Image (tube, rainbow, N blue to C red; front, side, top):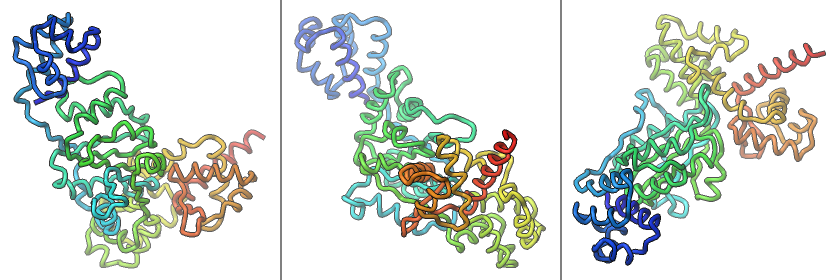
Length: 424
């Protein structure tokens, strides 16, 4: 039954009519206690009682239809959404990361006993979505009221970020709320979503989130539910305000990368050329998206020796040309460009200088010197690059550039240099 929905609509209609509960009781002939029970979601009216209430409130036709629909849902069954994308059949590795998500979502082991929000952050192509969806399938039996999923398009190559209100509309319809009963504004939709999830045990996967502001209205309203969020952004706002636990995802280990490649092209092929297989995944920077692209290329050429694939990838210039596909959603260069486009002009210029540093890590002082900016400005740019998932920090506080990100940045720096030469 949808008593709460009817109660909310009845209360709103009474308040719009500027009537107290006692005034409505007197005008309709329905007892004040019965009206109170209805507004609190404790009961639904009989048809004759509903008619008396609507007449007393002076409702128009649209309002009468909405109340009647809400009151008629006496036998509506609870909708259990199953929105998770399919689990990846060739998923391999991530044992430690899966165990860490289990720890963060278990009340017995979670920091402070908080289990409501777990964010998976990391650079483009590192496998955040794959990990989140795989874990959610694994944990689905802990959440009997279903799973909700939405791609928030926070870093999308072809579309703008999804409006939270649009995402909430999809969630509410998946939970059985008729379109006519879904409010028009995002704030009211968020409130209704929290109300409809208050007593449920759900997994809500918010994939590819742009920032904390986009995710916040989409969080469920139950302590028994869990939001799993993926983003290139570090989501420090959710961690600070909502107490989200953040898992910072790193590239695969060499063993994980080789196992994942074997899952895509066949173990016999990798066993026949183990050194070439290991070199291939190293050339991919152990980045899951790059390994997937190479795996797809090799799958389309089943007779090609791995040693020749290594030679071809080593000889490819620029390097990222060897990791392209006809689908921008799984193209390594396109994935990096989505992060780069979020930068302001000054930070983008700083990034093009940063990639000229020869080592895998760079200090803040060296970064400032490379870009010829003050330390305060360098720190701001480095924070923005970290938030965009283009760099990370190591245990010593130095800034880390992935090899493929460096290759992408070098392409941009060369193009910018050519443009400057043309202007002179």
